[in-house]
Image (cartoon, rainbow, N blue to C red):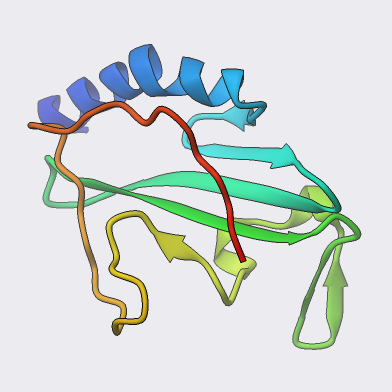
Length: 117
């Protein structure tokens, strides 16, 4: 890993992960989940191979599991890659998706994360 990635991970673990824990997220870096009202919410960090950047992906699925191509995946086995609908923080709603990376420079900590339909 690069020094910049190591530094970002250290800061995420120091600042963001405790906030996620306060919001009820479980799991280990970079994959987190929490049970909500009838569904499970996922949050994961993904890093650029070029270094210095990352995205946060969020998604949700029914608590009973996620159906993908006619097969039900049990909730504990569902990963972000299974979800056909997921969001990357930083994308504008109702616009075509594009790869958007977040940089730690000039960003502010997340105070509250809320999933909406």
